[in-house]
Every structure is written in structure tokens, then in C-alpha cells.
Length: 332
Image (cartoon, rainbow, N blue to C red):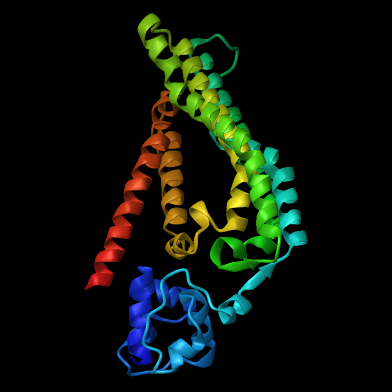
């Protein structure tokens, strides 16, 4: 088996398209296509990188007598040496930073949902005359507060991200834990398990039950001011749910990253390299803000919140369709 055949076989064994492999090797898809058709040969740097991501030795790639394709997950000593190492000190520092940032990250994330509450309240009560304030002034004041909350939350998230930027490689690359680190991280994760499950369960409960205030108002009252308050109550319940889920997930996710499990397995890292989720959620956020801010009535905020749960469900379908597309392409 020549090098071209081995690259093709290993790529398909991983379930990657030529584009995905090219992205990981920082080359064009055409370059990968030439390698697999034997019309070009990768340089030494790319050979070493393929040895790492395919989890095979360079001997296997370069020597034609090495015929057997290793099973996924098998690692040679050579591959282990190529991987970046994470020491106990690195792991402890990372976990400590994520623990300190958990509350501020959760609060900042939840603030994005909380930001229109004052705008809805002022708009509703200025229309009914309950507040001695003009509608334009109320809307302007509400928008100012909304933008300040969004700006503040974004600053917090950017600062937190900067503090752990040196560990971002764990989201994208395979790495090696030094001796004894895995056991310590697993023990820490087992201590967090109950907290993670309890916070997630509570967060899901508040998110699911968040629609109750609107339903109750629709049954017992037609007052616009009361309806506006019910919309604010919906946002507060969703906000609380998101806060609890994020707070309980920060340290847990850090452990998953160190152990390369859950959403951070090598296969998931390869799938996430397409940046699909970032593009998707940016588009969803843009649609949410466009629909909410372009409407003349404060009632728009009471309808557009539905975008988020629908987008969450749809995202799972989008990911599933994308994976099916990649697998079908690999079989061709």
C-alpha cells in the first residue's frame, strides 16, 4: 500500500472529508486530493502532522511494507511524544481559573436574556399612562440600558476568555496528560458530578416552565401592562435557568476538556473545526435582534423569545444533517 492509499484509507476510517483533513493540516483541499491521487507528495511537516492526527507512526505512512491499517485509538510511542503535554500544574491552574470564572461567566451569559426586561416594562407602562413618561423617552431609556447590559456582558466574557486563552488548544488539538494527572482530574470530576446534575436539572426546569406566566395571563387577564409583566417574568425564568446551567457546567466542561471526553473527543474536535456552531448562533442572534428591535410594539419581545428554544432544537438537526452529508461524501 503506497502513501496515497494510506492517506485515503486513514481519512475515511476517521470519517473525515478531504476538506476537513485539509483544514487540520492547514492546506487546501486540492493538495489533499493530489496526495490521494499520488500526483503529489506531502512535505515532512505534513507527514508528522498526519502521523499525529491519524494516530499512526511515520514508519507506517512512509514504508510501503507497512500494510495493516491501525485501529482508531491505537497510539504508538512516537505519537505520544509528538502530542503536547499537560502537566499537573497546568491542569490545576486551568481548573482553578474556570472555577473562579464560573459565576461571572454564568451571570454574563444570562444577562443577554435579561437585557430587554426594562425596555418591555417601560414601554408597556408608558403606553398605559401609569408612568409619567413619554413613550419615545421610555423606549430610548430602555434601549440604552439594553445596550449597556450587552456591552458589559460581552466585556466580561472577553476578559474571561483571555484569562484561559493559553488553554484553547485543548478545544482543538489532541494532547497528552502527564503521569497521574488523569486520575486527579477524574476524581475532581466525580466530586462535581452531583452539583453539575442538580444545577442542570434546576436550569432545565426553569427554562421549560418559563412559558407559564404568559399562559396564566392569557387565561385570567387581557390587560396590556399585566401581559408585559408576564413577558418579563418569562425572561427572568429563562435567565435563571441559563444562569444555573452555565454555573453548573463551567468546571464540569473543564474536566471534560482535560480528559478529552464528551464534546471534546478527537472526533468531535475534528467535526467542530468547521466552525458550524459559531456561524449558526451568530445568525440566530442577528435574527432575534432584528425581529425584536424592528417591531413597533413591545409585544414583539414577548414573541421573539420563542426563537431560542426553536433554534436549540434545530441546531441538533443541523448537526445531524451535516454529519450525514460528510459520511455520504466520504463513501463516494
